[in-house]
Image (cartoon, rainbow, N blue to C red; front, side, top):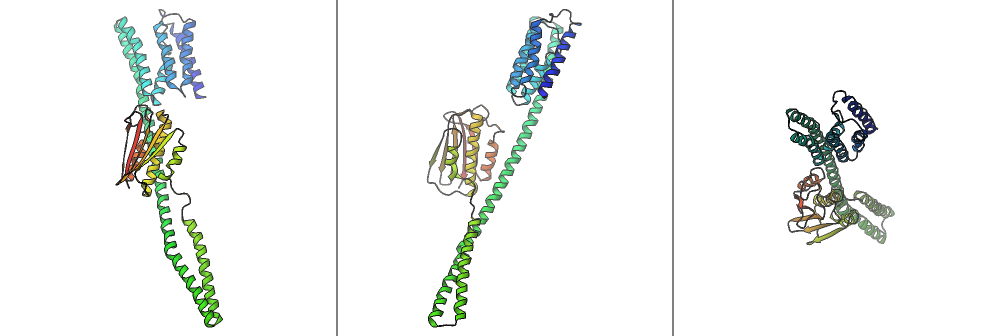
Length: 366
């Protein structure tokens, strides 16, 4: 709805201002059907702003260049192109935005060179300043938006890390309690039940008082009931859904959304919980970036068990998270992976792979 309102409002402003401009510019080219078509094209290009602002910029800039070259009266018809410059840069498409801004300045600049004069030079300078006024605030808006997204991502990552750490510690404590119950209490109760049974048989053989036999029977039955109930408690304390780790990497590779080869070297061994979780999260985030941003067709995950630690590496045949091999783009999870690996005492490296594509590699002590 806002886009429709913008297109309609800009159509009124552009067409009305152009028609009225001929009162003060009698030497301009008369507004013919070609001129109206170019004006409408420049305005309708704004319909692309929400989805593809670079397309809106290309169409509106081309129409504006044609209007200027054909000598139509100066009015507000450059406005759609300036709006497109702002939208393109502010949404992160900096290269396309600044290229469009340079094109808008270059067209009148070439005309000023071909027709030298003070008035033309001053007009070009003023026009360049207007384009800069549209482009520079767009850079500020883009930086503020990127900063906000980064803060939100870091907060979400930190919250997720805190939740996972709290869950891991809680599960470790439950396991410790379960082990204590199993190793100590269960053993003690089992001994009580066994000796109660032996004592009951001894009393029966010796013809002892029935009260003693009944008491020993109660002790034996109660001990067995306590053992049964304790097994139920142990089942509750032991986690049914543990945090993911290296053991879940094959399942992750099968459901990654692209062909993934999983390779393991060294002698597999249990990893510390924090390291095991970090290994899984690094592979998960790296494969997510590969699918979303790298344009890759396949990936290879290598898990190497070393003497002093574990090394995990993800290689793909794409172009990296920012479209350029080896470039560490901050908004795609690489920084979050590095923080997670550092929290486990390791280090993370990212960049172009030796055979092309992109590589994410992490080493952690284990």
